[in-house]
Length: 175
Image (cartoon, rainbow, N blue to C red; front, side, top):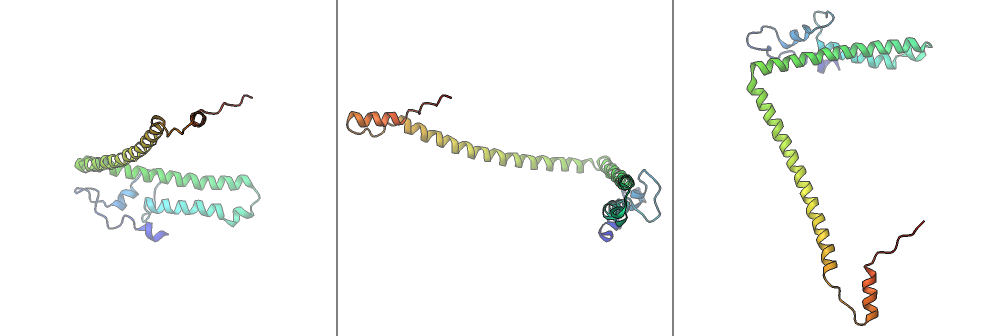
């Protein structure tokens, strides 16, 4: 798992033309506790996640008898993971802010693209509702046509009464 995430930012271009630092060094410069020289924020996030998982399946915790000690250890691992996740989020928010300052047209293009996607989604939803509406309009027209069109009236008064009474709803039972 360390291989795919460990080199995530290596070889990427610097943050902006005047900046001599690469993405990895910016990751190291994120706020928080000091890092080792070769460790990036992504590496620490990965290792803290692995530590959380390891603490949940560790034999020490399985064989341990003190539940409070186990809970404290797991809570510390999870808290460290959450802290590093916040730092990672902060890094990406800073990058997004830099991008919006340096290339505002890119942000506008993304916004336009998102709006187009939303319009397409809503158009599809409108079409779906129109299809349902047409279906139910047809059902109502069919029902109205049956009630307006005089049914073939059979000969004789008894047959007419039977036909007419078939359309009358049955009385509701009183309880």
